[in-house]
Image 1 (cartoon, one colour):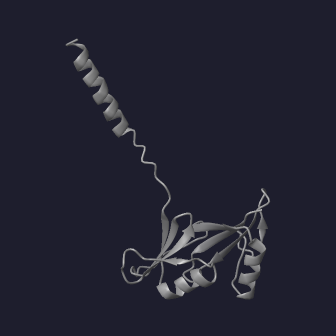
Image 2 (image 1 turned 120 degrees about the vertical axis):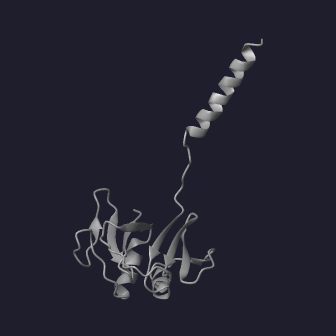
Image 3 (image 1 turned 30 degrees about the horizontal axis):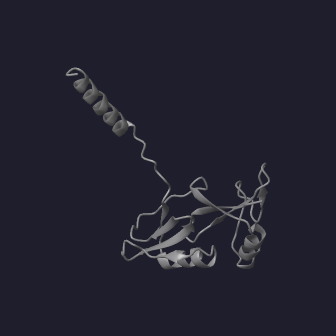
Length: 150
């Protein structure tokens, strides 16, 4: 019995050590942050063009505004850093809508330029899986992919 207790202790300790080193962080996507020139101009775009709901900026810092992307995900617009950002279409985020045609009509009525991945203006791509897709840019040049949910 005296030999069993130390063995049990070693087994329990090694199991605890293994679980701690497993690195199962269960990370989940939380938000995307964009560096913007004018937070009010960018906020108007995301609010009026994409109909995103503005939510409380919990940092309480000036020059930052937060928007809900649904399902607890957020978009943070930050105008506190003044260095220029270099962008290309591969740096983008994507959103989807079950009302793709209505969204397309809205941006056309608001004279917002859109394109396909290759850059052909006012062109909608239909992917191999049947999903319609376009790309637009916000006031700071960030690319936003919009997909239908057919």
